[in-house]
Image 1 (cartoon, chains in turn brown, purple):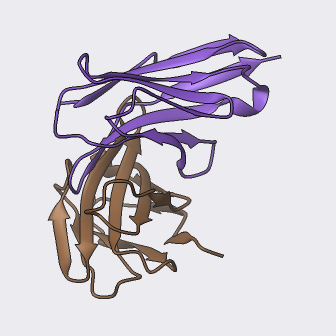
Image 2 (cartoon, rainbow over the protein chains, first blue to last red; image 1 turned 30 degrees about the horizontal axis):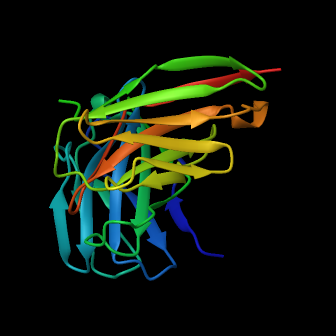
Length: 115
Length: 110
């Protein structure tokens, strides 16, 4: 089954404790992206990757890091989480980032709480 | 700064009625306008999308109307059903990035 998977689905942590949220897709997609969803703010793009070893900042990159060492994986790293990073996070992928008419496929989400 | 403005924030419609959600954008470099539907506990999923050289696109009960000169587009859900109750996001795509609206929570009551 073609899908985007994220782990963990739920995470409660404390301020300053480094964490990684994994994202994997099995569709051989070139483009992958991370979003955070907050009430009243919709989905905001954190980072995106056009292909392996190619990443770029989205609209809200502060406090996050990403890497794209393999085509299928795009982990999101919070090196020193803070309470304002409490949010619902979505990973998404699409066939290409340059082709305009590409559907993005979203993972099931990771609900992160930083105490 | 929200580049895609979406309204209303919430909407209650009776079964069989028409649901209308509006979006406006500022960046004329956007060249693809998808709508996503999100059910509770799930990730968003593409519902319907339109290119700026088309004024209307219809898929079943869902229609996008696009006004390029006004930089506005809207989603119309005809004969709304309780199963349509979800959060709807408009979006605008440029070269590499996608910008989403703030979302509309739709409730269709029997």
